[in-house]
Amino acid sequence: MIEDTDQRIVGAAPAGARDRESAAAAVREMFTSIAPRYDLLNHVLSCNIDRLWWWRTARRFDAILKRPEARVLDLCCGTGDMAFALRRRAGSGNPQILGADFSHAMLQRAAAKGKGTTLRPPQWIEADALRLPFPDGYFNLVTSAFGFRNLADYDAGLREIVRVLAPGGECGILDFGEPDGVLGHVYRVYFKHVLPKIGTMLSGVRGPYAYLPASVERFPAPDEMLGRMRQAGFGEASWTPYTFGIAGLYRGLKHA
Ligand SMILES: C[S@@+](CC[C@H](N)C(=O)[O-])C[C@H]1O[C@@H](n2cnc3c(N)ncnc32)[C@H](O)[C@@H]1O
Image 1: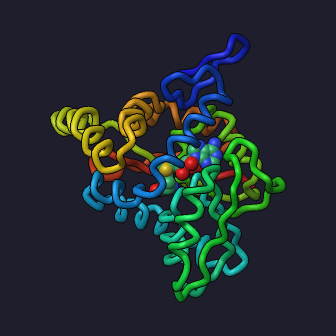
Image 2 (image 1 turned 45 degrees about the vertical axis):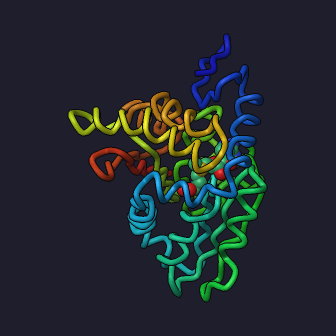
Image 3 (image 1 turned 45 degrees about the horizontal axis):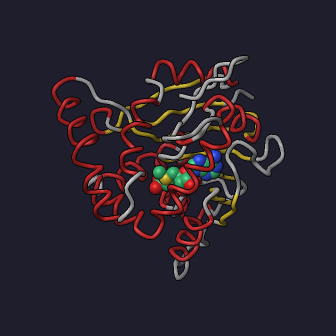
């Protein structure tokens, strides 16, 4: 956790990061280094459950996605799978869907995957989630899948989401959690000891797959995260566990 003396800042802190800027730079470098194998690793390490989680998340926002005039932003979109899941759910609703990420290499993969699809693909934009290049109140829906946890300042990230949401707009943050009980124990062994080894072997890069369990451990538990969402300006906030709490969806509503 990175702290500053005036205000306690809570966010991702990859090894060696001293402040928000160096943390963000390390995160960007890390994802850029694994971009070529990111999709393969995601599917292998999650045993393909990631596809189910993206689909479940997209389904929760059907009402917005079916509106033709809706504007949707998928933050920290990476290689685009959450944005594509939103696109498929929208069907002929055809809202404007943007995917934003600060790793150019990840966006290049997303753009390549969009070619040849029959539905209008999402548009991709290189941008920092903490300084979004969009006016206040622009979007009806903002999502982020497994990206929010990597922000160097969670509260600033939440405030930025609230800022770009229109009144009545919704936010969905899908991210990992830490299940309780026996399953939690088994899961922690897998996540901390098995996953980093497979990840390092398949990607050929050492750091990122040790950072992953550390970043999940650092991420606020649901009660704390919901408090932070309300503090940032969401009128309503809720959490739905997925797959025994290995992942979960935070939903926030910006009151009209
Ligand atoms: C674990 S990947 C998730 C990608 C994708 N959403 C998915 O579900 O597979 C996290 C992504 O967040 C991006 N990211 C992290 N911090 C960011 C920031 N401050 N601004 C924009 N993108 C960021 C990284 O570049 C990376 O592509």
